[in-house]
Image 1: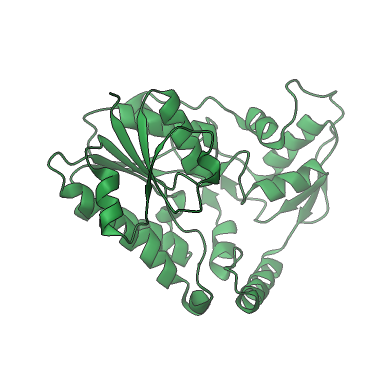
Image 2: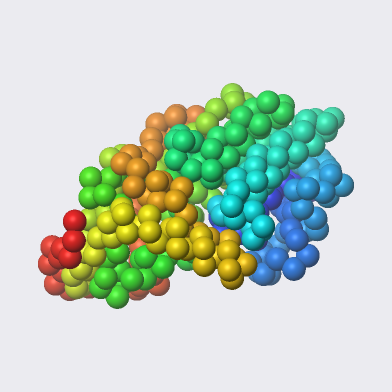
Length: 329
């Protein structure tokens, strides 16, 4: 019988990709899911444990006998309308307490499994937002509670089914390049399939000392927004016009978004903290440590990743793309 990998967040964008990759690699996947949230898993053969990170019984069933636990579940925005004024309450409950509870559960096993936490590059800058601070506190909770652990700090992750970057990429595909950060800002990117491959490689690498690993798509210097616009221009064969949104406008939109979300009873994605993340100048990551520890290297560069994400056919269109046109700074 195949060894078991326990997985949280399996119904999410990243978690579903990880589940599919683990199954393809021959692992038996046991996933923690809510009863009505397993739409993404319909075509993936996994064992389901119904429950939540707040349910000790379901956590015990999830990790029992597992060789490795991969924790993909996390919160990127507040859940409860009552917590919009103090969204860090939800972040603390999910991104910190959820990690600690899972780690404590694994530590009680006779042979404690290693826990791989999918965190975020945002944990490097905890002062920027409640989200970033909660990711760092989650990493610290893992280190304090788990018998063996590994942290992954991916940059912005994109791919089919993504709800964060995909809307911006769709606008670029239509020819409008909304730029939500300074022209001088640089950031790393990673296709979701490469992230899933990296996690499988970590699962299969024994004897790792506790460590936090960054990773990127093979571009050591990262990207500027204009690099992404130029890549989409190449793929569509026509120029993408640059439409910069100034920081002051982003801040106004964020405050308005929070107010509207409160009225509608929905959690806001764009918040003042998210604006501080978007306008931060350096989100470039480094692959050196994870490559040395596991041998993993990314396979999907920016052009190939954008083509897969936007559903474009293989092969470049005629080279009609002019330099990125500028509608703002």
